[in-house]
Figure (cartoon, rainbow, N blue to C red):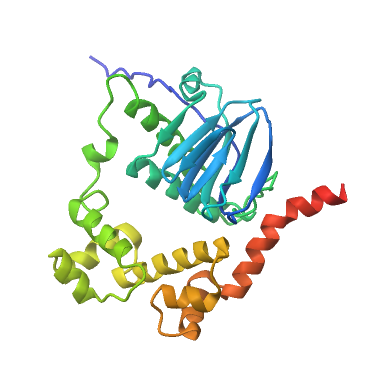
Length: 300
């Protein structure tokens, strides 16, 4: 008997991406709103935002169907980080997302992260411009980057539907993902680092307080973040500093002291090493992005 193939069914197919944004908003940012004939998702990575009459907190995502009016505003409480992805999809299964606000699992958060990473590899346009209307491709993009963006987005949509069915399907990461990302040790260490974000910790402190060996600790963070745990902790502190800068409640010296840096000069060096900008340059950049739309509207 000859082999016979089967045709695999596509439940969701995405062929066009309009925008992929990861933006760090000021705490007073406000976008009055728009409509367009394609889907858009807004996912809060940090802080909280107001969309229409809803308050979305970190780890929540809202979907807007084609031609549905939507807006976005910071609540004034914190300076939020938001992922925005707009795309064309005519698959009937997308009806599931109409009017939905959903929680994002760790696996799905990872897919969003991979999408942003691949977009940075193959999209020339900056991903931190919330008013960008057309993305430009890089001529020297790595092999497969565009396809990986599509696959990650399709996996994200499929995973969210499966998790929220009347009889939920077990998350994919619990079935096939190796230990590390969702392990109890990793989660415990992440909680420890967050709790000590305003202080100084060593590898010895982390190992002792979390009952883990040095080599295993470093192995986990190399696998998950491609860097050592102290390098990762430094990046965490700088990300928190960026959020505090956007909230505008403290000056640079106060932020430096609050985060446990020995001096404002050391804080500035670490900040520039991670971001490529000094705290002052970062402030000017974010303010320019936040105000660009308002200036354009005034000229019109």
